[in-house]
Length: 313
Image 1 (cartoon, rainbow, N blue to C red):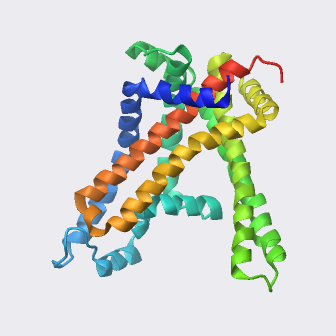
Image 2: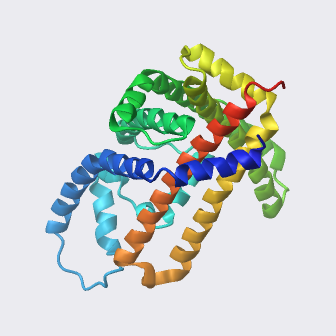
């Protein structure tokens, strides 16, 4: 199977799985609701002492927000201007590239998301492997049967990525980068060098992510496997077909890039016309689209692995 066929097949698999898409969206919302309720209560308390301000529906009281952030702690400290519109994905991208430390209070939501996706991948990959819909019993059984191994795979990948940010990232950006640009390099040239460093480090992060992806795929296609066997099978597959694996990743990532660009254009040039409920609707549509693309990643990788794994390198 060519990379293009695997990509098209993955898109088709997700398009023919509306219930899986709905399940993914519902579980993602359910995982976020408890933390949203906690944050809402803290905001209500803060707003209760705020005198009325004559603002439009799409305007923000910057003075109140500044005062709130000055005294906020815990989960409330994460309520910053970067949660608004296109600033949210940009902030996530910036943190990913620059290795910015996130508040420790986010450890619990991240852990819950990790377990939720470990269960969900069991359901999704099983559905993509069979090429048909699952009954409720089959879906539940598929999710829980692979849950411990998928959680372990995600933890291993997270540990490796944390190690990269603690070792390779500072070595590249705090030691190598200043030495390369020196003191006489122009700003455009220095920026170009930084982009190259971002790409090199990003490749390392992507490879670790792909290792986890294909380890999960190997668990479903070659089941059952021990954790070490799944990681070994994934590593061997990626090494033997590295260019094709990266090409498939980039093709699916292109969908995300197009969606991200469209979101940025709408949010940046729409102004107040996409504020209020329109802004919320567009933001939620972006999140749903991102979840669909994440499923396409898994579906296309599974189709490629199934077709190519047994082929000679």
